[in-house]
Image 1 (cartoon, rainbow, N blue to C red):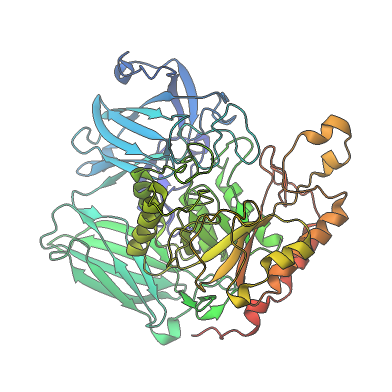
Image 2: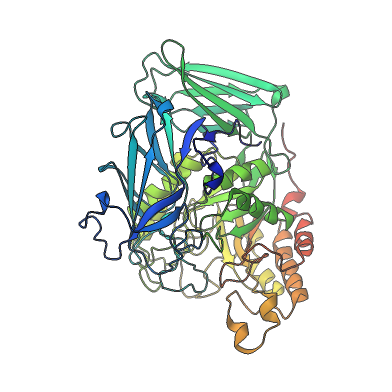
Length: 622
């Protein structure tokens, strides 16, 4: 389903605004103002800007928001460390917003942000991947100017959720150029003093209904919340409830049997959900539009079922990096193209790796029937060599992860959560910080969402005995050796990291018969340009294992490795590393600029034969 009633941003020249599309497609209001574009900017290497009066000063440089200063698209392109940076912009709140409170939204600012408006501090936020909002209703009104100042701090040392950002000056191995400051859309929208907050939309396939939890802000005496589900034929069902009694009123929207249509990769059907808040006079004071998909995810022994049927998850590792924008896609079309490239290569989904992707990516995944695992960019907690306490994730990891889960809860394309990745640490008889934080993130996810499975940590350090899903990472390049390593799942003795590296140590609690998949494999190091080079010119890139001699050897290896996992009836899926090259890591199906470097049809053909996991499946239920 395309954007439902796409709103029009207030702007005299919207074509000149980078990333002009509505940034929150799962919760759309009609009125908004895009603040992307040219901002004043200052580098603050000593983090002394507050003392030097930068809150009230003009700034010397110019930057194009929402692109970070390390990126080419920002107009700065400085890849050195930025311990603190400052932004400044003046915006006039539209006259038409009179009587409503302006909300200032930030899609993501890396890493710690403080925001002032007209000299008043209005927000603080920690975490580089998740959104935050400042209510400006007590600071500025319609028709007035707001001077917005942002300071972003981004430490290069100490525990901090960085994802794939390098802690060294240069890129190396599988870590990349840093992102500092604003890297997603900044925008304003007006709301009534009492207004809707982002709903939590839970599909109930067994009952053929949706449960919608609607948090509210402000006084609600005499107010009502009503919701309507719509499809291409019009209104399907509606419901209304008083807003007086509950902090978050709940609607149940049962679908008539003849209008029930499940969301699946083959048929990614989305309903439109319209929510309205009315005052005691029956006047609509807030209206939003969302989308909803009717689908279920459940566990059955070692199987993960989607809508009651086994769907083999042919996933690809997607880092979400771009040559010119780094973590920020240059335009919305680039997000769509990445999904389409993955589908063209035979994948039906992705692990969104070491990054909380911007919400528009998930919107397109919903529309295109693309299965995804929501993940967190947790790398940055390691403080030294592998030991019993080298991982030191902070309480902030839990808070930031919960913000991500809350933002993305209602997207049907998300079929699982994974808060941590490759937390390499030995398991001892002492409780460590990693043990505590891993369990906290697992339990917090389970409490926030009872509708999806949770994988405690992808690869290496499973610290939660009752994790819903178990996995491993294995980059063995010989298909026959890989087959022997992956054998044993039918006997409940699957491959467990790090037995391929340090067999004498234990990093994970034992496997207990959960659904299992090899969630990283392959990573075949292939660059056709370097394959034709000689000498030192062949040492410019990085990848896993021995490079193939030619493209034919790549395809034989790819088909062999994927075939091992397709043939295993206990394996519910896999995740191949990776979709695109990223800087020096050249093991993608496509180049970093998304151009082809392989015969994609052969990659697709290798994956399209039926998986053993699907051979004895339950038929999808109506």
